[in-house]
Image: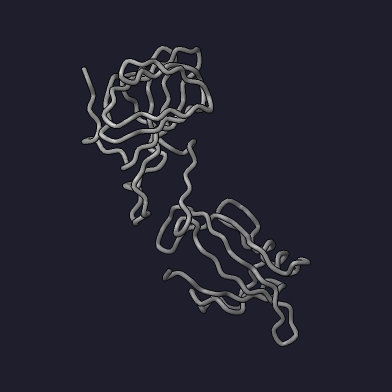
Amino acid sequence: MDDFYVFVWKTDGTRLVYPPDLSGEGENMSELQDSMGKPIGKLFIETALSAEGEGWVSYYWPKPRENELSLKYTFIKGVSLNGEDCLVGSGFYADDYILTKNLDECEHFSREGNIYITNLFHPDLYDRDVYLNYSIAHTILAPGEALAPHRMKNPEIHYLLEGEGVIYIEDLPVDLRPGQMVYIPANATQSTHNTGSVNLTFLAINEPAWRVENEEILE
């Protein structure tokens, strides 16, 4: 990554080596906080002076030339330089290597009334190759709602998270309950109904990843 660098501080917080901005060398960074108020300067120092002498510190920081906060991990190691206690550190942004997504941050779109779907994972959501060709959709059916009969060109897996209902696969009724997995063969007509009093929530997993041209909605 082009933003990789190693920095060095004294354990009193004085910054000795800072490749991104040499003019910042000599500043005391012991009061450094991340954008959410986490005291990362103190945590760097405490980690270096701990019994282990090393460890990871996580915090939120904007990437270079970006305003949005990203989760960053920095590894700190305590060292002795010319007989003085110092620390050496280097970090990386989690989403450069690890993909995470919180459901409460996702935007569901409405479909057929009180039915809400979000792409929890889809390879098209990312601007880099994730080397995966499947998708995971989080689906919510309000009480009394039903997904219209449809077919997928590919097999599909549904995993039930909450509620109760029934899915008809080629007119065969399959009762649904939390913790249940249902395999739906390719090109099979399917329709899911919420028969309970709470939301019916499930994950729909498609391989290859869901595409509009792979789904046929039936009248």
